[in-house]
Length: 396
Image 1 (cartoon, rainbow, N blue to C red):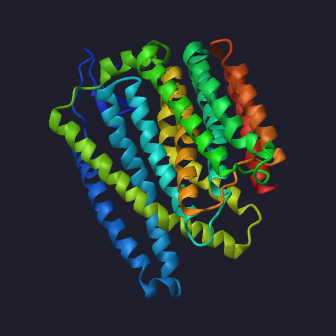
Image 2 (image 1 turned 60 degrees about the horizontal axis):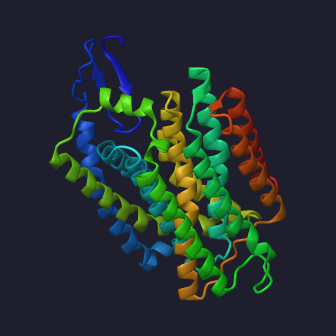
């Protein structure tokens, strides 16, 4: 390794200097680290102010509502990155696969808060949960995975992955996707595309049970299937050990950031939905669902892409596929519970075209990871399907 080379780390999000002897120098920007600790508290205070203004009459007059929504959107986007920064810092101390789980849970909490906020805003939107979950699966399994495979292969020629761990991800993801997004179109008790109350409770319980079984396998029974040796060597060589005070500060900032995101999400998501309704956009539900998925996945996507380019493909897949799996396994039971408690209609079944895209995507994932090695062509194929998905949103 060359002297004075600076690397931007995928997990800690801080720049460190590696000397010729391999020693680690302290981050060169203490001001940026201080800002990362202060911003979650500042954003949380701003979220309280915005929530208070949302109930004021003056906000609903003229351009004030648009300005407040834009400010909330900017704060939300910045806070998502700050939350992931602190989650990543804690993930380094927890090590794999617990670090990846922490990232996944943080992102899932953000996504659930946004979906629920929009569902309960104004007239109940029965399609939003379906569109958000479907968008996450498509963006992750085509766009994010395709980018990771393409850039990783361009830099490292070929990349290896652990078939046992990846196959476990795909088996659970395939089962939950079919049960939740396809099966509702073929039931007889309820209206097409939806479950009856008893069916919804049963499917939600199955989702939680299956996801819990997967976590037991990932965390306890077969941890070695999900550990990337390249990532572990990278952490040991680059990341310094944090003190107890630093860990406590990261945990506090993570909680504060998540609370701020939950509060800001209601304002932003409601504003987007209102804007699309005023413009009479035909694919409004699909666009809102894709926007929510893109917003919450963006920081985690950057972590996965950086890992793939460091030749840590299994780490990248753990982050990417883990977010898709948690979205179905945790978001749907949460939304289903709220639907049952509030009497809100919930439609989960996909339309015909989306079913075809989902089937192609899941089949492609099984084929792509079946050999245990990936190339540039593998990534390009995933990206082609992603482009088709985006095209069909813009031009149904």
